[in-house]
Length: 440
Ligand code: ATP
Image (tube, rainbow, N blue to C red; front, side):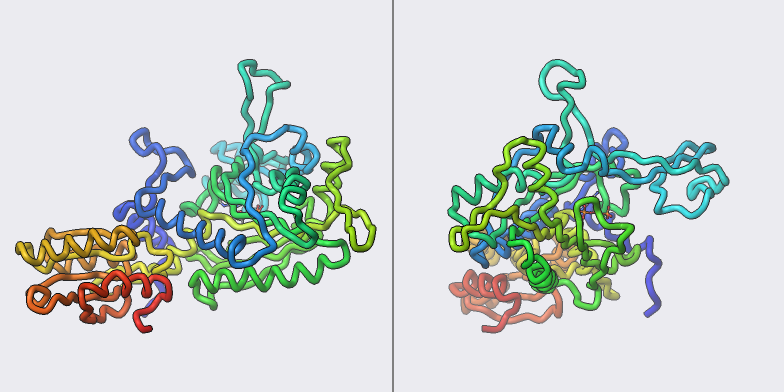
């Protein structure tokens, strides 16, 4: 089969996301707000499932990482200490002709990618932090930033968590939360936006053991995306060259995914050394962000290995990875654990006995799993709609149900059907969602 044109695959995905209630343009009735998106009923479920999977992976399936939920607004000095006021910038060029702005590293020469004129200015640095004012007076003393990364909330709480949880190094702190960046060139749907969510984990280690921990976390993070169900051949590592390292990083590797618009970063794994904790010690004037090792009598500022992923970007990756077209249908092959709705329940035709049996199953199932009931239209159309929505199972009551109390369960991917006794349906679906397959 010939390769599909790049734009068209993304366009099809954007339109499916709107049609099936995954993602809507923000403020649509006012013409939309550039690069902002709203998650609809199914998008909200998928987002929650992605976050739950990460949270379980980080804080439940291992016992050396604690959770945190720090505030978005923080003391402005934090961003001076972290280097963001000074260094969280992108080079920006303006087109003197059409007035559009671009990230300098995304254009070639002086030619404007929008109007084609040789009219681009020299690059100047542009700070990406969004600002606002706190309190009733809008002057410089009230200036405050919307956090551009969740990490700093973790650094400034290092001692609080370590003390409260009696943690010994090495240990980590995980957090999921909103971050804001005034990106010059947002785009590619939810890939790069100005408001997004991050899933970050900072792991505090003894200096000298950082390289070993860096390797362990690299391995763990790739395993995470494989466990999430992404196609292995679409994932790869890329190391940052010396000229692209962030101001805080000693070593940085990105996990990249092959999107329809090329290989792009999905997550960054960084060795941040003691940069942030040492800076906070200096700027706060309280040198208390350090660790006393009782077994050796040493005190030191820990090094930090960071894993930094985007929720929205992970969602986009799951959607792209799952999107498939067959002759007769579009199907979103989301793994059952991620699928917003686990099962659709349908009476084959709208006859009293079949409707009642289907409703009983729906009532029993929806207490455990997100379930959808639909009795309108042909059964084929109802299946297709759920295929597009990514629902892995279709449960249908029919004439035979009234005779032997069994139903048909149809799997989305192969469209195979099995007959299951009604009293076993809930357990069958639970097993399927947990194990991602029908057997067992
Ligand atoms: P990029 O070069 O793509 O702008 P970055 O290298 O600045 O990203 P990091 O600072 O390492 O990104 O952020 C960690 C993760 O947060 C990224 O891998 C991505 O998943 C997510 N992320 C960063 N910026 C955005 C954004 N503007 N929109 C959506 N997700 C983002």
